[in-house]
Length: 224
Image (cartoon, rainbow, N blue to C red; front, side):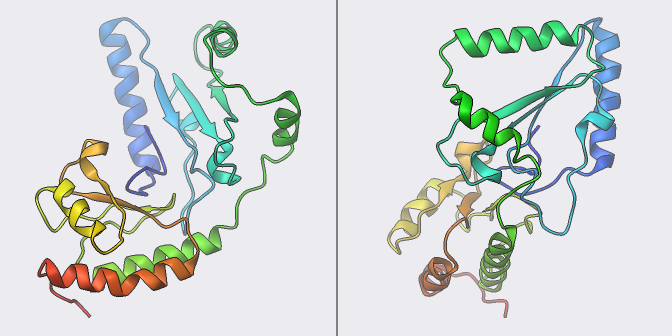
């Protein structure tokens, strides 16, 4: 699972996590083998108006994976951590296996100095107020132009519904207006597209006339 989610920005509520925990426990008994949940949480500190519930509270066999390339804005730095629930059977053996694989299978490891620095930055994070302003501006502007989407609760993406059934074709048309989007098909969700708003606010402001022209070409109805 991935919460806050890329590409939708949705944060899974505690009710969903509790349901998933019960389901995994039930199916583990049914199949007589442990089923593990991997929780991918690189955006856990980038949230707006909500808090991210801890999966460790609701799921026994859960492994949390995160990356500081997002919450510390260290794009390109391959550094993060893995945390395994202490309720996992033989959790010590699991952690030893993870360390062994990380050292021997050719993964890129952060230098020792960076590992020590990051250990002292666990309560730090990027200034999300800039992301919040960008989210609000882009969300409000696009919905007023007729685009449909869920308002993100976290991360820095929008995932609107494509005005065209063919999201790849929509991305091609948007490119004529110097708007670069990622087709939803790349996320297993055709008919949508992803936008990233981790840019200067001026970039979004300057793009709005192009969005209006694009919406006009596709016949969207202005809602404002």
